[in-house]
Amino acid sequence: MKTVVIVLLTCCVGIFANTRIHAQTVDFKKTAKYLDSKQSHWFEWSSSKRGNTRCIACHTNLTYTIVRHDLAKFTGSDDLAVYNNKLLTNAKKRIENWDTIRVFYGGRKKAQSRGTEAIMNALILAKHDRASKREKISAATKQAFDILWKHQIPSGDAAGGWHWLDFGLEPWESADGAYYGAAIAAIAIGTAPGYVNHNEIKPNLAALKKYLLKPYGSELAGNPKLSLYNRAYLLWASSELSGLLNQNQKSALHQKLFAKQNADGGWSLPSLGKWKRLDGTPQSKKSDGYATGLVVYAMLRSGVKKDNEKMKQAIAWLAKHQNADGSWTGISVNKDRTNAREPVKSFFTHAATAMSALALIESKK
Image (cartoon, rainbow, N blue to C red; front, side):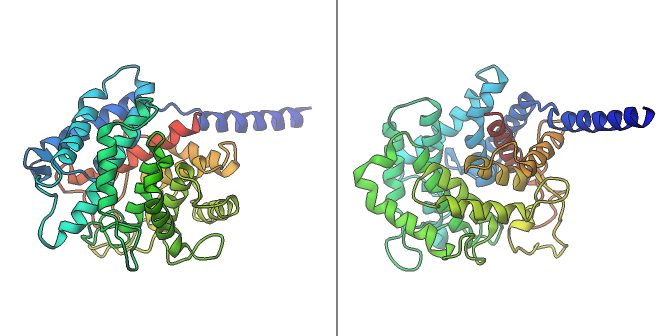
């Protein structure tokens, strides 16, 4: 009898311990406060100024706009209005004055700068339209998409995509970043209420899909030359825009991503690409919030069930690794940012926080 009791107690302890991990309290109010503070840093940072507007960054502003409306549902207030409206006003101002306003980067970088910003503005406005429960896109969003198509590359190897800022900084500002940018454009199009059904964009849309699928290859899990990082964004895009990946391709890609999952349940950003740090130090194999949040969100959106055992481990990792200030840690794949000033110091943590929160919110649906 004692043996049976001990066994039962051991089982119960294991069950309760597992439940505690999954029921880890996540403070979304702190997350919102953290992300708002980083927007404040960005808008006050002299290096972000472009005349009387601010440049937009993938790691800070774009990830912010992707998650902030969703976070508001958990904060119980409309405190997102201050910085979300600043970002929205900034985008509208730049769109309205597109031909005369100061570009983010001029000279040889002008085409890259224009293409990159066109995609970002479209996503910011499309996300706002969806969050506002509009039945169709606003006039400003339509203008943003008109500009987007104006800068789509018409011919050559990159036809269907856009010129993208390349400063040799992975994973956002690099040569491979152009694919990420096109995937973001696809997400923006799928996010904008009813826009995908506009007849006039069908040729552009077909060119974009061809661009995204061209390097994917014939094998179900995709061409190894296309990084898992970019394939994760393609997976995400496929959940917003039909006609990108079929269910067999999605399932095969799920397995590829699960194969890179760490024993602790998370993912490390370096495992999703082949990048070299500029400071020469080895890449960290430690799980981080950006990679884990991205993979979890993309897989949940594309059909992986939240009660899948590996997915439960991943969600538990996210719930367990929120920092005291509401953030999740991101680790640069370029160089050590420990001694850098804000907001540069925490660029990867901005993105990690937004993506981790987005994934956890999705897991609650």
